[in-house]
Image (cartoon, rainbow, N blue to C red; front, top):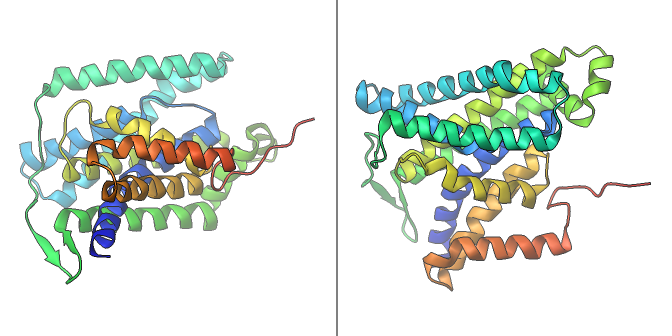
Length: 291
C-alpha cells in the first residue's frame, strides 16, 4: 500500500504536466482543427523564459511563471497573425497545416538551441525538501506541480463552462461557420484561444522544468505523451485531454511496481492501445454518426 500511494503521488505530478500540455493543444485543435506539432517546443520556450527570469535576472520563481505565460502566449498570437490566419484565408487543408506546424517546430527548436545551447539547465528551486506524511513522502517540487496544475485546471474548467468566452470557444469547436453566422466574433475568440493555449503550454513547460531539467528537447520529448493523452481522453475534448493526461501519468508510474522504470512509457502506450480497443473515441469521446 505504501508503494501504491507513493507511485500515485509520482503519477499525479507527471500526469499533471501531461494534462496541462494536452488541454492547451486540444483547445487549439478543437477550434482551429490544427495539429500543432510546435506545441512541445512552445513548452520548451516557456521553460527557457522562466530560466531567464529566475536564473539570469535573479527574480523570484513566481515571477518566472508569469514570464513563461506571457512569452508563450505572445508567441501563439504571433504565429496566428503571421502563419495560421493567412494560411486559413488561402484555404490551406489539414495536411498543409500539419506539415507547416511540423516544420515550424524544427525551426523553433533550433532557434532555442542557437540561443541557449544544448546544455542541461535548472531553475533556482529547492529540489531536496520533502514532507513525510507517514505512509508517503512527497517532495516540495511535487507539491508545486500538483497544486499549480490543479488550480490551473479548475480555472480553465470554470472559464469554459461559466464565461461567455468559454461558451464561445465551445461553440466554435462545434461549428466554426455556424458560430460566425450566429454573430460570435470568431477572430477575437481565436485570439483568446491562442492566449489560453499558449499560456497553458508555458505553464506546462515551467512545471516540466522544475520537475525534471531543461534542454532544447524537453517539450519535444513530452509531446508524444501529450498526443497520447489527447487520444486517450477523446480528440478535441479539453476535459478529455485532462482526464487522459492524468490517466497516462498514473498508469506509467503504477507500472513501475511491476516492471522496471525504463519500460513505463511502453506500458503507458500499451494501456492506451487497450483502452482504444474498447473505447475507440477515447474515455470521454462520443461516437460520430455517418451517413
